[in-house]
Length: 348
Length: 208
Image 1 (tube, rainbow over the protein chains, first blue to last red):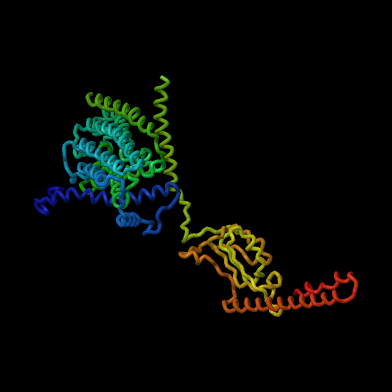
Image 2 (image 1 turned 180 degrees about the vertical axis):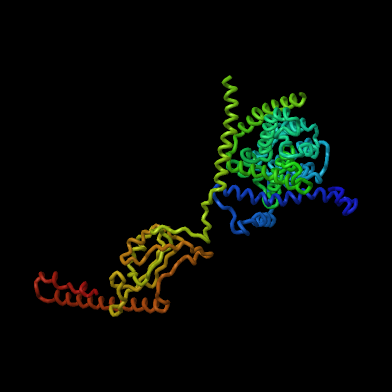
C-alpha cells in the first residue's frame, strides 16, 4: 500500500499523511454506522423502533446528530482548568487512534508494520487513561472526578488480563508483529488461534480449551477497557450523571464519543487479529486477497462490536468490588493457568 | 474444598446467567416492536375518554352549573336577562332558554380534564370530545370562546337588559313610594291599629 501511494504521488510527506489518514476515514464512517447500529439494536432489544423519520428507517440520523453536535455551543465551566479541559478529549482520541497504526486491515495495508505491534497497542492504548483522568480532574466536578478515578482503576486492572491474553497468542505464533500473527493463521477457520492455530492435530486439540478460554477472557477484558456495560462504571449514568464527560458538550463531547466507538473497534480488531485470523478468509484461499482481507477484518471486528452492543443492553452494571474481583481473582488465575499450559504443550 | 467449589460455581453461574440474558435479549431483537408511530398511526381512544371540552351553545341555558362544578375555575360565563318579549327558543332537552349567554369561555390550558362539568349540565350541552391535539404557540389561543353572539349583539342585549332592569327598578320604587303614601294615609285615618298588617303587601307582588 505504501509503495502504491509512493508510486502514485512520489516520495513526499504526503505519503505518510495519506497512510495515517486512511484509518481515520474508516473510523469516522464506522462511527456513523455504529451510532446507528447501537440505537437500532438497543431499540429492538427493548421492542421499540428507534429513529424512523430521518431517511429510510432513520438512516440519516447519525448525520443529523453530528451536524447538531457541530453547531452546539462549546461550554467550558468557569471553575475548570481550561487547558487540561480542552486537551483531554483529543488526548483520549489520540490514544485510541494511535492504536490503529499497528492494526493490519489487510495483507496490503497496515499503518506501521512494526515488530512489536502487540506490545505497542497495549502501551499506547494506556494513554486513554491519562486523557480520561485529565478530563475528570480538569472538569472540577465531583461526578467527573469519581468517573475518572474509577476509569483509571478499571483500565489499569484490565490492562493486565488483556496483556496476558495477548501474550498467549504471542507465545503460539512466536511473533509480536500483528501482520505476521495474521499470516500465521492464514488458511481457513481451522487455523485460527482460537482453535489452536495451524499446529499438528494432537497439539491443536490440547491447545484448544486454553486458547478458547484466553480468547473469551480477552473479549471480556476488552469490554472493561472500553468502559462499556457491564463495566461502564466510569460513565455510570444512574449514579455519576455521565462520569468523566459530564461537563463536556458540543464537539468535545463528540470526540469523546468517537473515541469510545473507535476504541470499541480497536479492541475488537485486536481480538479478531490475534484469535480469529484477522484479514484471513475463513474458507482458506476462497474469497481471500487484499480487498477481501479488508472485508473479512471489518466483518470480524463488527461482529465483536455487535456483541458489545448486545451485551450492553443485556447485562446490568457491576459493582466496583465485583469488577476488581473479576479481574484479579478470576481472569488472572485462569490466564496464568492458560499461559502455563500453552507453554507446556508448545514445548512437547 | 468447599471454597474452591463456590469459586468455580460462581464463575460458572456468572457466565451462564449472562448467556441466558443474552438469549433473551436476542429473542427480543426479532420480536415485532410495540411502538405506535404516533402522528401516522393513532390508537383508538376508549369510548369515554376525557379530552377537549366542547359546548353546544344552542342548548346552553346559562345556568352556571358547570362553572360552579369546575375545581380549577376555568369556565367563564356571563349572562344577560332576556326581555319578556324575546323568544330564545327551547333547548333540545325541552328547557326554555331565559338568558342570553354573551360570554362562555373555557381556558383549556387550565382545564384538568376531570369531567365534573359534564354530568351537572341540565341540558347536556357541555361534553368531552376525543380531540387531544390542540397545542398552541400562544397560550392565549387556548382560551376558547363558545359564545355565538356577535359583539354588536352582545352590546345590544346587555344594554336592553340594563335598560329593562332600570325600568323595573323605577317601577318598583314608584310602587313602594305609592305604598308608603297609602300607608301614611291609612295611618293618618282614624281607624284602629289592627289594619296595618294587611295594608302594605304591594311591593313583592310587583316583581315579575
